[in-house]
Length: 129
Image (tube, rainbow, N blue to C red; front, side, top):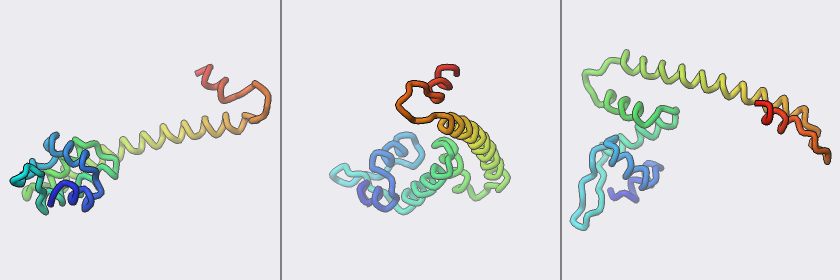
């Protein structure tokens, strides 16, 4: 399957697929006689795995590590669980930070009259820090 077909099959852009290949996330594609990249089923499955992991917010590096773990017949679920727990902690921290941002924004937006006057609690909050 060429890169355009692989992109269509995975929902990833050709640029992303080339990047994942360059970064060693997937093994290099074989080349056709005319130099076009050719991807096999295993590479497509790997691309889809990484796409799903990235969709859950794992970094590219963590996604690659999970892919390698998934391909290791000697793997233990403990290694996967530890990585997922670490990621969940990061996600919870990000949610807390976003909730604080939301609370501040709701507060200043609620205080702003949005009229023709120059006074604006939103700008005041940004000016005060």
